[in-house]
Picture 1: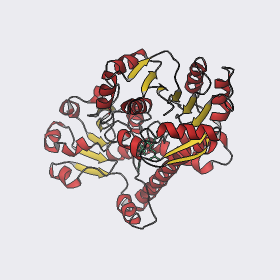
Picture 2: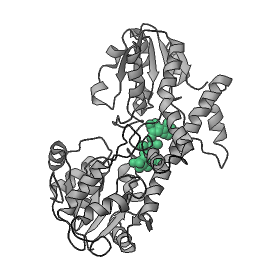
Picture 3: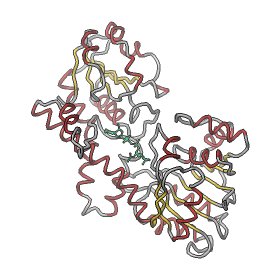
Picture 4: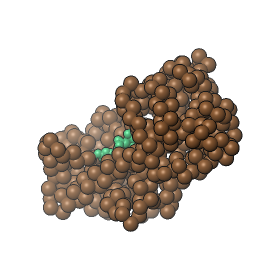
Length: 412
Ligand code: SAJ
């Protein structure tokens, strides 16, 4: 194996598990992050966010001296960029962290090194931004070093399993770049590794998340149609999905996270005249919190509302682009007294009963497994008016009604 020393830029949800996996397989890994707090956490063998099984791997590899972190780059044989690529107010990719990582790498780059971009980027970013930044080193990406785009595609909450067991797409900037990157990832990827060119790999990653976002938008549109026709959307979707070639996704209060709510815009940015369905779907999903708010107002006109869940999806402690937070802000904007309880988010994880005191409505916004154990009898006792609105078809209706709640379900 040619690559013994690797450097991972960005120690977040993707970079840290990736770094830890290479270290677990005996490579020496140097993590680089602009946040000293993150570097200190890693060096003291702790992880700055929740992800099942990650803490053990980080502890083990840090203790063995295989994983270290700092804010400054150092020479390595291979560099992996896993920094955030958020979307701007104008719905364009903000690539400043990729450019900054590339600048840092170019300061230590040498002949024969491999540079891999894992961050999700608009098509042609490897060619038009990454390579030119790296070539400021005076070296050529066609002759002196290798470049590939290897998009991350793991699901938060299941990252450790998916890093090893999902197939991978690697897009070489040159054919050799692809081969070298494949050799490196073979260290821990047990499934197939498909080789292509960098631009195809970039678009492929965006297509996957766009497929999901558009599919959810379709379900959200169908849900609103069902409401006007007084048809149960959940039942209709479940039955349609019995068909062997139908896979409608789940409707709900909107789409959050740093991927589905962001990546489709990277396609729109490159082809605004053509990407009409993609942009329209994004807008449908973005409007869902306002729609939920309208439904809430049909249940109560004023009073106190407690949101159950604010993470962007079940069983994670990640708030990015969370539709529940958008709903919370809408409620506050319009003068409702509102609070949040979420067992996964530290600042909202305490005192469910205190928060439910004098509330007029509970709104189930996220289907966390822990909410299956809610003690409705106890909660009801402290509420002013025991109403519950389920936006995820998650709560057992009979249980809530038995406890004395008036039960409302989105999409019926
Ligand atoms: N959601 C729905 N209905 C559904 C499924 C999801 O409303 O039927 C909502 C969720 O509640 C959440 C949002 O969509 O708010 C996104 O959740 P998700 O589980 O679909 O996806 P992410 O953002 O956690 O991870 C996605 C994954 N992409 C695909 O499955 C194609 C993951 O594999 C990618 O690695 C990740 O994006 C990424 O980093 O791009």
